[in-house]
Image: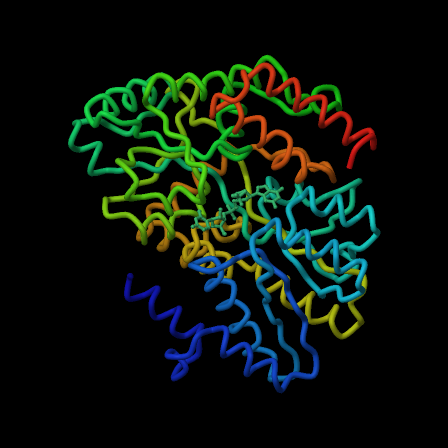
Amino acid sequence: MKQWLLGMLVLAAGLGLAQQRPEDIIKAQCEKAEVVAELWHGFRGGAPKDALDNLAVEFNRTQGGKVCVRPVSQGNYRDLSTKIKASFASGKIPVMAQAFENNMALYLESDALLPIPSLGVDLKGVNPLFANAVKINGQIYGVPFNKSIQLLYVNRDLLKKYNARVPLSIPEFVETAKKISEGEKQPVYWFVPDASTYAYWFFTLGGNYLQNGKLVLNSAKGLEALEFLVKAVKDGWAKPITNGFINENFGSGVFGFSTDSSAGYSFYARAAKFDVGVATLPGRTDKQPGFGLVQGTNIVVFKGADDKEKRVAADFLRFIISPKAQAVFGVAANYVPVNQGSGVDPVVTRFVKENPAFGVAISQARFARFEPALSQWEQIRFDILGQAIKEAVLGQATPKAALDKAQKAAEDLLAGRTR
Ligand code: FGO
């Protein structure tokens, strides 16, 4: 790790306390505090969790011991939304939580969220790409925090072996992946057959989930994207990964490429025995990168918070979207800094130079797409669309049958005929 960054992290963790885990420091900070504001999140570990804990440590240190923010992991993102829904029933609602845009729409159906401006927090300086996404019916209900973008991951050692360059367009990507797969006698493009991976292909081929305000999962473009993935597997250059993250499957064969969240970078780098590179996504042509899916979450504040808790939340939100906090957090976990000031902050320009992967994420973020912010979208993306993608890729249904079934199931859900 760069000396300079290491210095910052040690500072952030508190001099002399560098041996202590941030989690333990937070525990001590909150033990004596009069106000403890819980922040429920969906990080299970690794760089994202450490980076969030470090932000909380740093924030708490500026509060004179009176108040503190305590991040509490609830499992993964889906566990998190499940627990938040349960908390509405039990009444044990946290002050803050991470939320996808569709989660915000869902929580609003229970009238559970505070408008962010009511806290005296504004999104000045926040990248409009992310700021627009947290607006529902013209009101801001979340603060963009850990927003990722999909990138092309490459095994640079393998590229070197085949004297190949990073592919710029989809045709070049297919050609390169095919050539290397033939040489290695196994598929080298690894992908999780889920809504996230599919989104890159779908959006880059020109797909759109909403047509005249209606959700369409079985469009011509949708079919094209799914048929493409199914054929890629049949043609022997793409390998579906159905158990866990791609980085958890290194060792099960020769990894060449993936199209995955920028936030995966630290996990890839730690797990790989090869030189991990990242690049912008292959585009429809080599003139422009493909479209990456924006993932990661925003921080919402719940209505149940009392005045003291609201004040802590407001101060914390201002802190975490500051250019410097976003730079430190972004570099540590490879999220796109949500603050545009981060782009000119010398801290960041230097980070970009020293951490090329961070620079790639910032470039790719100019070519970004979101999934629909429908309150039922989480269920649709996992249980309906994700299920259809998996069935087609594993040969259990044709792409057409899978998507038609998904369309029907989504319509039934949206119309309230199923739940
Ligand atoms: C993850 C999920 C959603 C929604 C997208 C939604 C719910 C996707 C995708 C399903 O913050 P991101 O970019 O990346 C995550 C980060 C922190 O955990 O690190 C990534 N990670 C973690 C461990 C590891 O070994 N490797 C690794 O890459 C992790 O993906 O979010 C991307 C992956 C998924 O969780 O399977 O966002 N997603 N939209 N989840 N609940 N709802 O609407």
